[in-house]
Length: 441
Ligand code: UDP
Image (cartoon, rainbow, N blue to C red):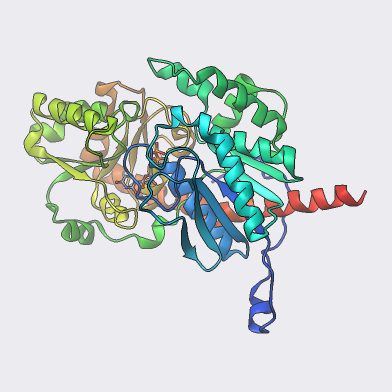
């Protein structure tokens, strides 16, 4: 397989901490801050607005700490009952800052509280006497915070968008009142950050063609370490109480209409496995009473009834991230029918466990899923194309076995978490070194 493009920065070595620790000398780790305004790295994943970004930031922070950094991950506090600080490991913690009411607020409504976030961040930093020479922000709201911090201090600003307004607004029916502000801030971030991380070449292309020609972009995808926990299909089904003789189609997604769960259901209803009678559709994802994701879950449940799949569908609810590899390993195919998908962690997690993927040919999924090699791609909302692709994998066992082997090899080679985080760690070291050099000139 071809190596990834765009790896143009000099390689530097892992931070050396072990030697210092064994000699019992006090070693000061370099502190860095990750900011993730609405996506709490210590939160439960799989419900409304808690998904890939939370997982990305948490895995990034924990892995950076294991590579020798002191990592503080900042997020907005949304519940007075939760602790202000969560220690993930000795050198990695989540810090929940009070910025606006301590309650869940949809992300489109929290920009007004971001100045308070900046103040709370500064107050925390001063109280603890920490200087962060580098801040890595996630999502445009945090990017705005990063731009304000850059005005106050000499920090290096790295940014990951996770979702781009200009792309998202093409597929959502109603524009939020914050849309114009978001588009303008996203442009400023690209032009003013020291480096923007695009999670796929597709995202880099969108940034260059739809956002701005200015600014530095580096392509570094998301990673996963799920393959370390791969179990056989038989073991996984036994653990989950799933029938070893069924053809299992898995869908792991938040109940958000843009995730296209409806397409998965309608495609399964058209698939030959349904006619044969041995199909099982497993839908993983949580919902909260009274919230938008509960409405979407009810809508999906209704469609399941309408198409005659009630007996053949399991709603597994929210599944702990550490238990998910059992679901991936138990499945014959994982369906990702999103209308829009900036990266799509579920694709690499499923493939890591050797499960072929049928995905929409949009965004990051076009980068992670190699058609006919690790899965198949279909146009979003095209239930016939999805059904045909699902059948092709379920009915041709040799083809499916080939996809399965190649899928896990692909993830090991291109999306291993440690290797991805090492690329980011090298980038941070490079940027910090550059800024020190500039100070001395
Ligand atoms: N996830 C989870 N439990 C669930 C449902 C989802 O841990 O019940 C995780 C899943 O493993 C993945 C993330 O949530 O890491 C979803 O990320 P993705 O990028 O696929 O979609 P997003 O939710 O960010 O739109």
